Amino acid sequence: MKFPLEISKEIKKQTGNDFIIIYRLSMLDLVEGGSSWEEIVKLAKEVERSGVHIINTGIGWHEARIPTIATTVPRMAYSWVTAQMKKEISLPLIAVNRINMPEVAEKILEENHADLISMARPFLADPEFVTKAKEGRDDLINTCIACNQACLDHTFQLKVSSCLVNPRACFETIYPIKPAEKIKKIAVVGGGPAGLAFCVTAAQRGHEVVLFEASDVLGGQFNLAKVIPGKEEYAETIRYFSNMLKELKVDVHLSTRVDKSFFDENTFDTIVLATGVHPRIPDIKGIENNMVIRYDELLSGHRIAGEKVAILGGGGIGFDVAEYLLYETSPQGELHTQHYLSEWGIDKSLMVPGGLITPKHVPPAREVHMLKRSSGKYGSTLGKTTGWIKKISLANKKVNMISGIEYKEINDRGIVIVQNNEDVFLEVDSIILCTGQIPEQKLFYDLKHLSEEVCMIGGAFEANELDAKVAIEQAFRLAIQM
Ligand SMILES: Cc1cc2nc3c(=O)[nH]c(=O)nc-3n(C[C@H](O)[C@H](O)[C@H](O)COP(=O)(O)OP(=O)(O)OC[C@H]3O[C@@H](n4cnc5c(N)ncnc54)[C@H](O)[C@@H]3O)c2cc1C
Ligand SMILES: Cc1cc2nc3c(=O)[nH]c(=O)nc-3n(C[C@H](O)[C@H](O)[C@H](O)COP(=O)(O)O)c2cc1C
Ligand code: SF4
Image (cartoon, helix red, strand yellow):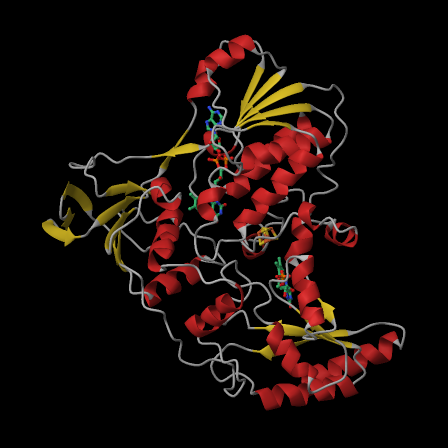
């Protein structure tokens, strides 16, 4: 206590009364044997006395094995902690973590949980957040989806922090969006994250952009991602881009699959192919069995899995599919927060030092087995600051992870695998294929003969499972130089 108080007092002495000092106080350590609530309140009162002007809420140490800012954490999941501190001291208090839209911030203020709101990542996602909120244009806010992929993951890889949904973040002076020197008529094929991101920046620069999307909705694979429990935020990215297309008057054609012949009849200056991927089907005896379901069939709701399931493939999509299968329904609103707190053992009563109690896990909706051919640990391809969360979460639900095997045969009762040179039979009702993706490049080769410029971006250029970061960044970079 002495250490921070001495620092606060010295800062106060050196800066005088006109300089606002904000102190970030860890109000919930989320580590075993952390501070008790009494100790935290005591420190807060001393900090108040030291002349600090505002106290910000700190949640969890880096050492904590509890997700505190990832997308699996519900919005405003921690404002109740700040609300407790409001009962103890009179300094203005700041609420933090997963407050990513104006309505969430308003709710916290209305419920008197805090006096001020802090946002970190939402301003990376949209530097115009405040202006848009002030103008009542929340529908045009590019919402932080709490993926951590381009901000915190970059920090821990010693790269410049940026943002998956806004690759210009922290590169504003390097990548200015300037009016185009020559206005072009551009056809964009594919309305997934890459196509959408390209359309927005190209239209902002003044190009005449026409988008063709085969399905009846925009968003591409983000429509599959948004149904994963804890990835609901991904719907916001689709909402943002869709509204921006309207705002920028991009000519959008849904339910329009274009092929080679289309471009024989319609001419453009440039064609941008953002046609994404298709699932890779492994060559396994019995793969045509009716119990085999592709991840896209499952997540789009076209097929339903049985009680016992084997997932083939241990990449990011395999992990997401496992999460999807473990829950009957995804809890929403206040229930979401309650579910999150009890799954991770967070003590809302503030009685236990460090804030951790024994977690209560909702029983898994299904028996889930994950299989992968490569040896070694599961989860090596997951995000640096979020992969551990997924691994703990699946372990808590008793997902059986098997690696270093061969797939031998699928029959009506399950799958035969070869493990340590022996055949092992796994009895399951459904087998979900998460065995990689193949770039959708046919159109690119079909159009090679055209004199128009043809470019390829996103998953169509390179399929990397969970890599919307590269897809959106590539789209943005192409659009600013066109
Ligand atoms: C379950 C799941 C979870 C994911 N989670 C994450 C995550 O957490 N982080 C991350 O970075 N990435 C994630 N991804 C991957 C991410 O969704 C992709 O990287 C991203 O969608 C690629 O964008 P894209 O625009 O290149 O392709 P897609 O999203 O595949 O979009 C391609 C679009 O092109 C359309 N199309 C194709 N051919 C034609 C044609 N001939 N004419 C017209 N339209 C056509 C398709 O209908 C589709 O809408 C996830 C993916 C899945 C499936
Ligand atoms: C790239 C990055 C760097 C951060 N660095 C710090 C830091 O140095 N000190 C700190 O107290 N919090 C740090 N944070 C946490 C934020 O201050 C904030 O509490 C957290 O991101 C949750 O708020 P948000 O949901 O509005 O982003 C950092 C967050 C990010 C994304
Ligand atoms: S990279 Fe993801 S978590 Fe980070 S600011 Fe952007 S949307 Fe938010």
